[in-house]
Amino acid sequence: MENKEQIESQITKLEEKYRDSGQDLSSYLDGLLYQRYLTYWDYIHLDTLLSLQVPRTYFPDEEIFIMYHQITELYFKLILHEQKQFVDHKAQDVEFYIEKARRINSYFEALISSFSIMIKGMEREQFLKYRMALLPASGFQSAQYRMIELYATPLENLVHHTERDLFSAKNTVEDLYDHIYWKKGATDVSTGEKTLTLKQFEYRYTPRLIRIAKQVKGNTICHKFLELSDAKKNNKILIQALTRLDINANINWPLVHMGSAHRYLGKESGQVAATGGTNWKEYLPPSFQKVVFFPEIHSKETMDEWGKQWVDHIFNPDKINKNNA
Image 1: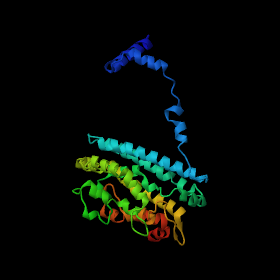
Image 2 (image 1 turned 180 degrees about the vertical axis):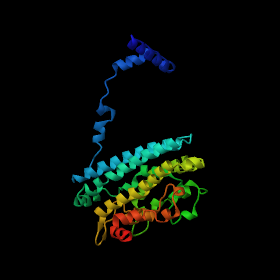
Image 3 (image 1 turned 135 degrees about the horizontal axis):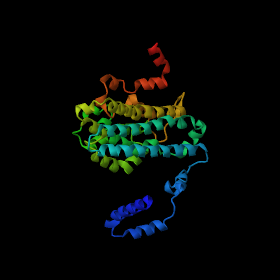
Image 4 (image 1 turned 60 degrees about the horizontal axis):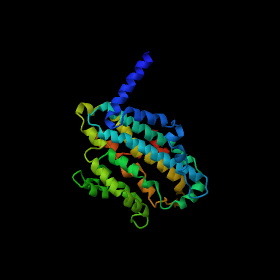
C-alpha cells in the first residue's frame, strides 16, 4: 500500500513537471516505454573516445603522447568547469569558494603527479623522430589553458613581467592581451619573429580569448577574493587554497614541463628546438615568467623569489643542499 501511494505521488509530480510543455504525461511515458536501456559505453561515448587517437607515424610511443595530451585537455575542462562556477557565484560564500579551489587543486595535482608518464613513459629516441611529423603543432597551442589563466586573474597580471609596470586595469583588453607573457615564448629563437605556431594560434583563438577576457573583466577569481570583506578575506583555509592554486598552476605545472623538456630536448652541446619553435628554456621556468594569479596574498619576499627555490630543487639540488647545510 505504501509503495502504491509513493508511485501515485511520483505520477502527480511528473504531471506537474510536464504540464507546461504542451504535452500530457502519457506522451512522455510512451517515450520512456520505447526508450532503450542506457549502457555505460553509450553514456560516455566510449567507442568514439577510443577512436580519437590517430598517430601520424608508426612509432608506438606516439599514441601515448596523444592520449596523455587528450587526458590533459579533459582535466583543463574540469578546471574551467569549476572556475566558471566560482566567477558566476554571487553570494560571496567563502565555503563555496574553498570547495571550488579545492577541486581545481585536485585536478592540477592529478596532472602534476601523472606527468611522469611524459617524462619517463616514452623512449627518447622514438620521441625525437615522431615529433618531426608534428610540426608546427605544440602544447603551447592549448587554448583551454589560456582560458584558465583568464578566469583566474586580471589580464594585467598576465602581461610579461618586463612590461607589467607599464600597464594597469585602465588599459584596454586588446592592449593588455597584445603584451601577454606567453607570446614572448613563441618567437623564433633566431629571428625574434612570431613562429607559425603562434600565428596559427592567434588566428584561431584570439577573438575567443579577447571575448572571454572582456566577459570576466573585473570578475575573475582574484577579483572575487578581493571583493570579500576583511573578515572573509582573512580566512586561512581560503588563503591556503588560493596559495596552493597559484603554486600548482604557476610553479609546479611549468616545472614538470621543464623536466620533460630537459629529458627529451636537452643535450650537452646545446638544446633541441621545440616542435613549435618555442624557446622553452626561456618560456617554461616560473622564475623567469613570474606569473602570479593572486599577488595580494603573497609576501614581497615570496614574489621576489617566485619559483626559484623549486627550480633549484629540481635542477640544482647541490645548491639547495649547500644552502641547507
